[in-house]
Length: 125
Image 1 (cartoon, rainbow, N blue to C red):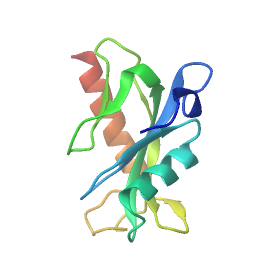
Image 2 (tube, rainbow, N blue to C red):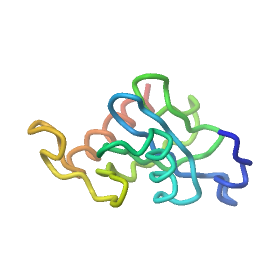
Image 3 (spheres, rainbow, N blue to C red):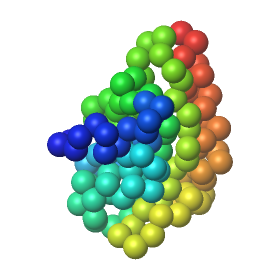
Image 4 (cartoon, rainbow, N blue to C red):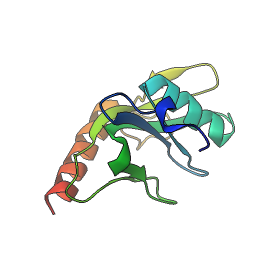
């Protein structure tokens, strides 16, 4: 990412992190969730539809782990907030619905509940 930090960090030091899930995962940070989602989708290559997860947290503490696309943050740092997961295409960004990618795929609310629980468990370790 060649952008200046000021391009994607809010005055409070926080930012939105969007992570494309599945094959060829990409991530991008921005000052708002829509820009982060669009930038991550474009970085992936604008192919088809893809689920994109969004988090909000301190820029210096928030990241994405390699191939798995899992959100990471500094141990003892600020716990990131789960914003949601969206079905993204070249022309739309919509909250994920059950079955959008396969019949076993959660909707946005189930995914958020699972992610919040996972982040809280990891935060407490």
